[in-house]
Length: 466
Image (cartoon, rainbow, N blue to C red; front, side, top):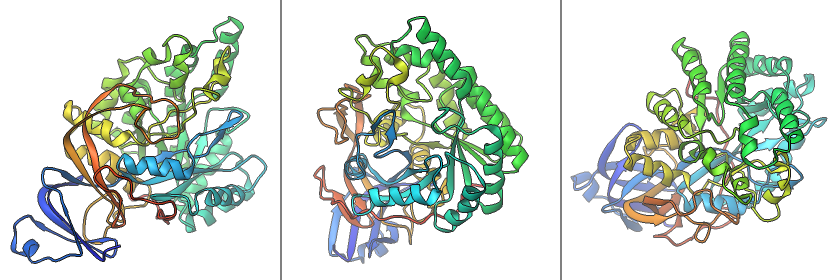
């Protein structure tokens, strides 16, 4: 790898600034920025010069919610860490934060070591881990402290999926109290899973088996109720809270009300809730199964509220919840019973492009695009300023983005290991051209140059967003 790389002539966009600047990279990190054409920039020499004229120069995306190789519903997510991180690179994402899973009756360490083994030597871009808590007890509470010291500084709990990941309010409160003590951040899947299971049973008894019923039983009110309850438990514990995959206007209203009180409550949404809807779940011939995820897709009118929440910073992050299952052989497990359809969508390759389309469409500004896709997730999960920005000392995770190129999203051309695209046929303005990860070119003018094993584990500090 050349020791010094110079990116010349692009429009550098971060969460706080836009400027025509040259970027000097040394030993995998950003060394300096200077205005294009300035005496300082003109004096720089490098082993390699990359022409960014007419392109945006942006930080590599940080996708803080992925599930590579996740076992679920008798099968596993179809992307490995190798295929999933390669697809992430193609989509301009240079860091993922995946979820290690604790199994009930087992130690956190056991689950974490399993995920280390899955990822080690296989990733094309950098990676970190959250820890899913499936079994909160005295032993695992103590382990939380040790994991925070190890750079695993966030812990996910589920109010959904009884018998699998579900935690009751008492366990949730204990974990929140521990995180308030050790500086960790609790991430919450906020749906009332106990009530949802009743509605699932009743729907199936009525013969309502199609994919669209997945969305109908996972009611908006049950997401809003669980979000409210999670916020109150966090208040009792005096702990910060991050609610994952917010999909509904009523759930967002609970977050906004808490934030209006000055509470340290945060939320993410995902592209599927911004661009897809229950119309997709209702597609005929079981095609709706492609869009089964939890929280579920909502009626289209919820989208305006989510965009508004992103503009007002009541939602801080857009992640993908990338958890792909092939239609053939995996989603088809739920034919005749929507509750058996594996929950999850592919998206790690599409997020940066879809959010740029949101810039084109006037939903968000260019800087807000970078904020919700790069800077805020990096700050939220203890990666900033190493990740999420272009500044001296930061890792040289940099994307050259062509804002004028046009593309059509399709499973025919994507690089995720899944046999369909959730956004098949969608026309997008803007496309990733070149991607650097720690100064090493992994995508060179739409040609893959990366390799498994380049991606390194990133030790995270505690939340920097508080």
